[in-house]
Image 1 (cartoon, helix red, strand yellow):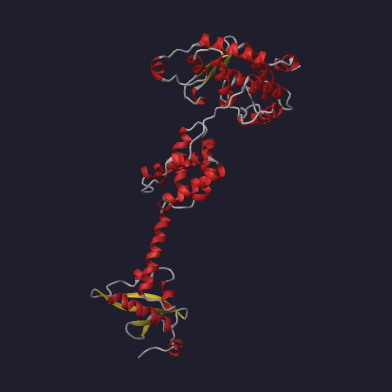
Image 2 (cartoon, helix red, strand yellow):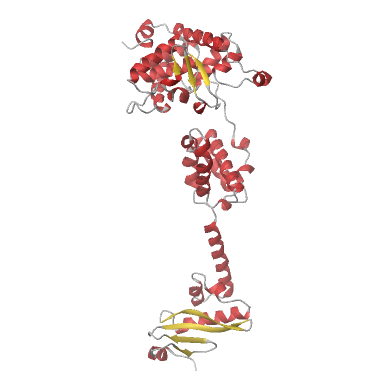
Length: 427
């Protein structure tokens, strides 16, 4: 005889578990402690088994019958009720009137969600790649990683790798091109390619969408061609030394132009790398783009400037110490303010500090110096077979060339007060 709510409420504990049948295998178990629990007694493949539906009164009689009916249908189809009814919200769906078809759809969706949850995200893969490769191999890993941190991770960090397809990545790269420029877009494309390549190699995902996005379609990097003419050099140096800023910055920018160095090569220099007696500066491979030691020949003007920087440093081991902490080397970005002030004073546009190397190279070639000597001074690889078989240092030729260049920079200046009172030494 089927149970009723009134009968169920009257059932009392008797000190041990017992059960009352409803119909078609649905039973109510009364626990020894007094709790009541719905259970189905079913048979699958000739074997009896039990499957629980929930506690009474949270699970009402009518709702228990609905769930039991679906459980019996599943058994008839050769499926264990747990395959569908164990998923979250499944019992609630049955109570709300959903059938097996809807339960199957929900179960598939839940399985996909679990699979996605188990997938590695772009942010996780990026973190592994940075820790295992970038931090160990790159000279300035945090600086190089900036495009990933600023542009890729904010959009993709929580997205599983397998769900990032060509269309999604292409839309992001093109949006960066539109709002941040071609250079940023190409940099982010390159980083995405590296991170996905690493993920595929380590079986974190099965595809690399970045490799299917051609860099040429993103855009072309415009090579810098800006250099200063002689009148612009005069205006730049005049504006630089008349700017209201720390003198060490002025000397550093002048040295970068005179020696055609990269910012990091000078800003990270220590006094132990400079031999005033020999007139040489040896930049170690760790700070060179080429990963090779680079010997810089010092013209007389450069030696004077370095000696003044040594006095300004007050005993610091660094050529350009931090103004707030002389025990640390200054960051190269500290020079940007003085450089921008010189540009503004000289009414010079579209010129960055690295373009000093373009300026030096262009003038040195126009003055008739050997291309091999110029390229060696710039720490560039000499192209062709000559570069393959030649290991010449051109020390004497480079010193002669850089001394000539330093003299030229002096002659470019026409304001004697700037040359005598500002270039040579602090009065």
